Length: 172
Image 1 (spheres, rainbow, N blue to C red):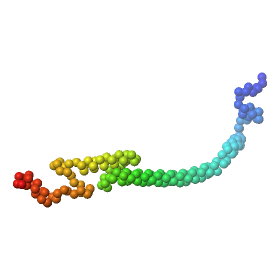
Image 2 (spheres, rainbow, N blue to C red; image 1 turned 90 degrees about the horizontal axis):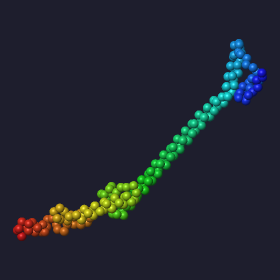
Image 3 (cartoon, helix red, strand yellow; image 1 turned 45 degrees about the vertical axis):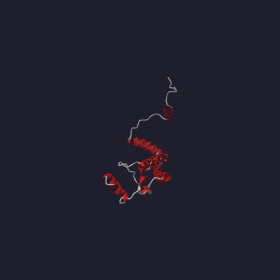
Image 4 (cartoon, rainbow, N blue to C red; image 1 turned 90 degrees about the vertical axis):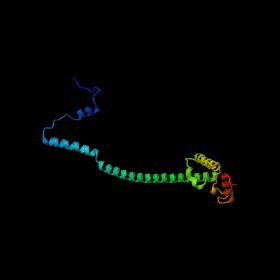
């Protein structure tokens, strides 16, 4: 009976059996020689490992330095864009205030994300100010706003006041 390869055996097994038969190690010298050969083969696989490790470490350092510079540049860009957006928003707010004639003491009430929202709030403030100026005093008198350039029709210490008191008391 002959043993022919059936095709199911691994090719390495066929090559190894064809070259030499297995010989058991019987002496310490044979063991050390076989071990030494095996270690040499394994070390040859990783001969350039230290060089590759050094190159990889250098690459990581360069990449980290570049990444750090890139991150710094991106952070600076974000800061500048934020400052530019804030300046544009403030210009828009001041333009809306000037257009609608909002008095300085009410400027802090004008806020918003965009021009439309700021304009809406500025109109609301203006309407409230106009309503306040037009509202009568609870005593039936008209309110006077000195900062708007109006002056009272009669002086508080004039004869008009005396005449009003006399009429109210019935002494007139």
